[in-house]
Length: 400
Image (cartoon, rainbow, N blue to C red; front, side, top):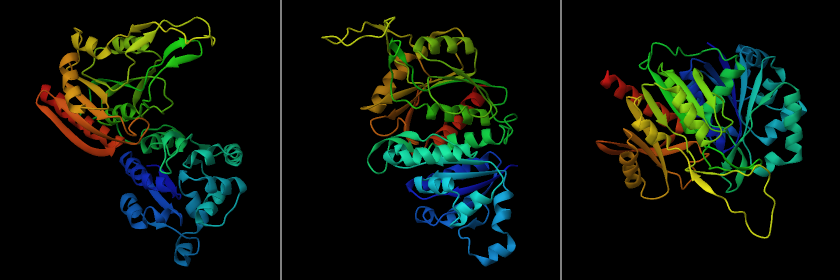
């Protein structure tokens, strides 16, 4: 069991520390929390204590705590120190070696690896001072994750969002050496082979430009990880994304729709296939050299990409359970129901992507089957993945 000391910083992203604790505990880690004064405005010590099943530390000046466990001991008994969210202010104080509260004192006193997941306004993240401070703490040995890009609570859009809790948990496992924390064998899907596709595809226009979409790949990666946790042998075919590979998952990186179709065919046979990727419908007859700006826009000749889901449905090696995804902006259930019949899938998982689903941390879905549809309330993508993985296990068990 690895021991994580989690420092919860200030900001609206602090609430995501609750989901992170849940994931870390599920993976077999012990978590002890330090809650900053600012962070306490967003989450409470009681909440963190209930999730971590351990005492939460809040101040350097609690003499009882100092008598029982000095801050030096607290900083050094963990296997890894994690800062979530790492704000611009906290990163600046880390870079300057300040020790003016419990969090920064622990960070200065620890002799263990430190991982920081930043979250701040896009302009704060791109500011020269923040870039300088990030470079400094990286030079000091701190692992700093790159923040995600997307809509922010302040109304702006750009890089600065806290990475998804599942992505942070994966980074923590990697920082700890990638050792297994939860047995992946012996689960409900032990002995089953599963294929998952995730992310966008990039269709080149010329050597420097391409057509793509806003898919982040997070939901597909979360599903792959959840299936692996149930014991499945998972192959993840991933479009061009920068997410960490879920523990226990074999990953194949691809670029275009044709690349993805080839990788899917190579991965067969499988017991179940979950086609989460947002595959481009069209490709372009790419120019061999960079297109130059002229008097008129260039004419792009489009050709239809292979329909991976429909092809898989007609394949003699069709999986027992074939699941497609439908990203819709209107008439979600009607369009997804029609897509299930048209493509030949067993299930379609549909969602409305007109909001912040692409790049966001939560999802509200409609599960379309031959028996009808059901709606799942908005949940973190990791929770959607866990629930869907359980349903997949139910279905495969019923087919056995």
